[in-house]
Every structure is written in structure tokens, then in C-alpha cells.
Image 1 (cartoon, one colour):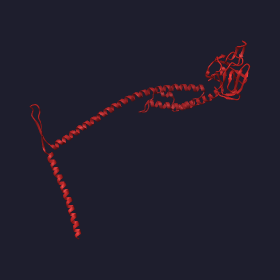
Image 2: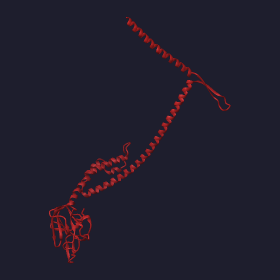
Image 3: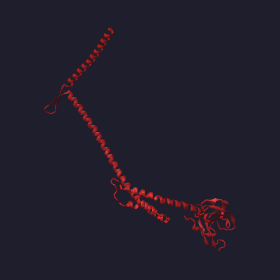
Length: 337
């Protein structure tokens, strides 16, 4: 029991001390507040004394009102400076946006001009494509019908029709031009396939100048001529090509196979190449031969050099084209492309 009474007494003393501590704190705080109130409530007299003989102006206030007025004036001053800075920034931003807008309008005008040029070029392209298709015998009726169904005919690009609100006419024109070009892809692809097939055909038909890089000239044409040695009229069965010198490279005028490599008293060193479609070519009076019998050659492959062998009055190439048993004028095939 004695121990219990002692604990209760200690508890009461602790609580009493805590209460006394807070009471002291509140008392000090209250005294401080009263002193602050009395300090700020102190009367202050302000006097304005003009330099002239005018009456002195005086008014009375307290310290609290004076401090509050100073705080308010400082806040107003800082607010004015801040909003003035923001206004200046906004003015600069508006000026920048106006400059960008002018540049954008100038770019838009340039874009419109380029768009008009594009439409004119597309119209010329359409006319050229139609002419090319007609020459090649390609029927464009189906393609045109499909194009017209999609409103992709270029003629519609030049009709000034109202577009939807907010939509630029140039945008509508570009969309129609895109649709037209998509419809033109198929005819162009057909032309490409046709040219590819014709390119393979041209490689199999002797149609190029038989001297490399197209040098030299024709010194004697096909047909009736005066023989340079006998001075008698005779039928010249080929074309004579001259460069005024020996050693210039001779090329195969088409893909084929070498069937003869030999020497003849009249033709000198000569080569005969067999091509497709029953066509043969002969190259005579050669100085040197660079192919052998049975070799496969390609168009423009060097097969020898110009010479002066056989019956000849100077370095030249005698070139013949045979179709079956007939000798034809090589000039009709050279550069036929």
C-alpha cells in the first residue's frame, strides 16, 4: 500500500509540473502578444512640411497600419512589375507568331504555284502517255474507264469546283493527281514489259555498229559499186567500215554462236556468227581473231580487230548480214533501235 501511495504522489507531482510548465509558456506568450499589440498600437504622427509657406500637413496613425500599408504597397509594386514583364513577353510572342504566319502564307503561295506547275506537267504527261500507248497499240479504254470512275482524269483537275469547308483546293487537286498516277501505273508497267521483251529481241538481231564505240565511217555501201582493184562494176554484198588504221576492235552485232573462223584469199581472216531467226553475220579482212569456232558471243563482245588481209586496198572491215540464203543490206539493221 505504501508503494501505491508513493506512485500516486509521483504521478500528481509530474502532472502538476507539466501544467505549471504550459501555464508559464502561455503566460509568457500572452505577455508577448500584449506587448506586441501595445507596440503596434502605438500612435505615430507624420508631418509633411512643404518648402513654401503652405500649411503643414500632419496626420496620426499607428505602427500596425503603417506596416500593413507598406506591405500592401510592396505587393502592388511587385505585382505591377511581374504582370508588366508577362505582358512584354506576350507581345514578343504575338510578334513572333505574326512573323511565322507571314512566312507560312508566303510558303503557301509558293506551294500553290508549284502545285499549278505540277498539274500542268501532269497534263503533258497524260497526253504523252496516251500518244505512246496508241503508238504501241495498248488499249487504254479499260484504264480510262476505271480512272474516270474514281474521278482521277486529269481534266477534272482543271475544273474549278467548290471543295468542302475548310479544305484547300490544292489538297483536293493533289488527291486527284495521286489517284490518276495510281491508275497510270498499269499502262507504264505494260510498256516496261514490252520494252524488256524488245530489248531481248534487239540483242538477238544484228543492229549495232560493228566497230567498238561507234568509230569509223562507211567507205563502201551495199549494192552496185566499182571494184577498187578491177575497176569493174560489181555487186558489193556488204558494208565496208574504215578507221584508216589497223587494230581497232570489232564487236559482235548480236548474240550468237561462232560457226566459222578461217582464212580466204578474198576475205582474208574472217568470222561467221550464227544468230537467232536464221540470221548470219560475216566479218572479213580482220587483222586478228579473238574467238574460236563454237564460242557463244554476246552483243558488243570484241571478236577481233580491223586489218588489211585478203584482197583489200587498205585497213577496213567488210561486214555482211545473211538471212537464210539471202544477202541483205546491213544498213537496214544498224542502229535499228
